[in-house]
Length: 323
Image 1 (cartoon, helix red, strand yellow):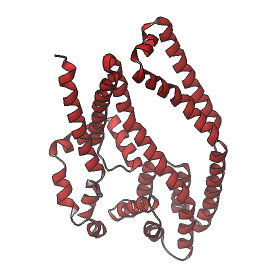
Image 2 (cartoon, helix red, strand yellow):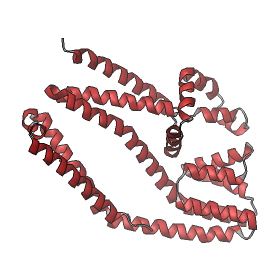
Image 3 (cartoon, helix red, strand yellow):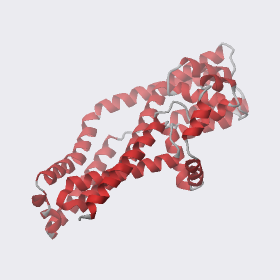
Image 4 (cartoon, helix red, strand yellow):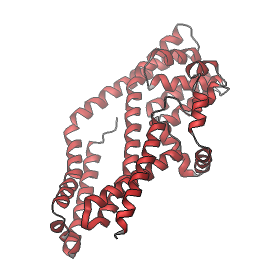
């Protein structure tokens, strides 16, 4: 009996089980960090009075131990930062398990699609399963960062007006957390909670900058920190920064509109040949197998991959206009 027949159901069942476990954690409305904060601050306790016991029971002790061991490593710290920037309610260990699940699922599906050439299909499926979670993570980070940057100009104006009316900086940040929509409100609520737990303004704002890797936010936080050291009229400084940021966002929007066709041309150059080759392989594997069986075909594959990669890089460099 072909061992593949026995392995495929096990891989499929295990990957689907791990995938659903990870998705259930992803759908949770409160993280364990918020639960622990709720034991200290009354505001968080009012938001999630029932989350403590549920979350602690939902996470096995082995997962907590594994996550602590991974976060001690440098790649674990980087991954934890990436998850925080994407606002995914997952630990590093859970994200790694989800990646393993998608790899197993990709191997299973690739083996089934490849049929006679199941090894090639399995390798391709494993690569796609490994890359897919990271692409999703990067997409979430970019989406959240763009939404934050779009709100930053109005946020700075609100902070300046609040300071001008006599509020302190902390009261102004609390107003931003109440009045604005996510992701801005979520981040400033977290800043005010950290300050309430004993961190200084500088430390809380530095943590915000680590979660949101934005040059505009860096400029605002630098101005606030300098004002804390030397004094001055912070509301006027924030007004000037807010005007600069709003103009930069407007110009970036115009540039994205003008370069949209070139950007999507780059996507088509990269994706279309691979998609067509995959479709032909599914329809007629014997016909496509000549590419990697014949030495000339292998050279053609390498040359095509290099050409597509160079084309994508050149197009990205052309349309990547710094403002």
